[in-house]
Image 1 (cartoon, rainbow, N blue to C red):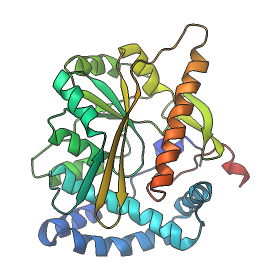
Image 2: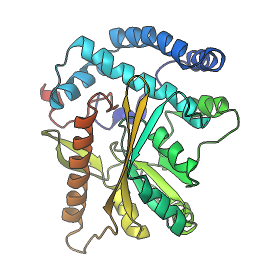
Image 3: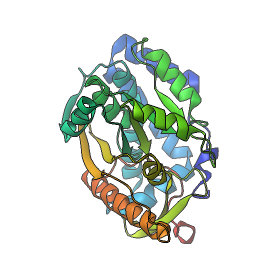
Image 4: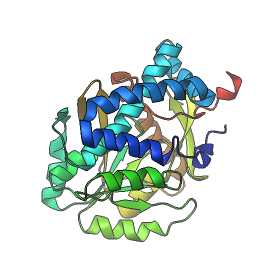
Amino acid sequence: MARTDWLSVRETGSVLGMRVLLYLCTMFGRWPARMVLRFIVLYYTAFNRNARNSSKSYLRRVGLVPSNANVYRHVLQFAECSLDRLFFLRRNFAPFVVTSVGSAHISKLTEQKRGAILLGAHLGSFEAMRAAGEHKQANINVVGFFGNARAVNRVLDDGSEGKVKTRLLEVTPDSIDFVFKAKELLEQGEMLAILGDRVISSHATEVNFLGSKARFPTGPFILAASLKCPVYLTFGLYYPPNRYELHCEPFVDLVTLPRGARAEALQGYLQQYADRLAYYCQLAPYNWFNFFSFWSDEHAE
């Protein structure tokens, strides 16, 4: 599968299966649903060759043994984080131990009514980070491509018991229509949450990530430059069975793309982002959830 072909990947699992897990969570709590999840993940890893190969490729780069047991653990943590999204959408933090590093940055932005981009990745639980931010009265809008995740979001919204509806700002590949809405939200002091580790268009640059070349989207930094807003890195690391460690750190106050050196500046910002992402991957190595061909040299593996 090509590196950008994740856009065509269909949602894994059926909506019926998701609703069964939702029912288990609602009627019996988190732990019974987690037990069922173990069997689902065992089946998935056994029969999904692409997921196994992608996991092994990542595990090698992060310094772990790419064994089937570690692949299972990797996919299981993804499934558990996905399940926990329901609790965070309901603003139910009771089953978890949640700690934060740098939450004062979001509080300060909220107090100042200053908009910003919160740049994360498919690392751990961004929903945990977003829920904690909104718990502090920060309005956070998720920016992304949702074409292959509509059923997931629909089931999760249904399961939130009306306590919250996911605030989504959809990006259409190679279109800038959403920029006007993004500008309006920032001017109102709201946050734009973007996951910066998946390419959805031709706007991407290759940088070093975990020892190999990989393509990252330039869109978040082009958007930040055009809107003249600060960028903060945000990651919600998951440590089984129930601990979430939320991180927020300043990345850049103003993205500058000089005329005549635009490409070089973008590559610099992307390399800095990839370096910080690699750092957090090392902190929680089973937390990175991109189960598709990601690195430029994977065709040679």
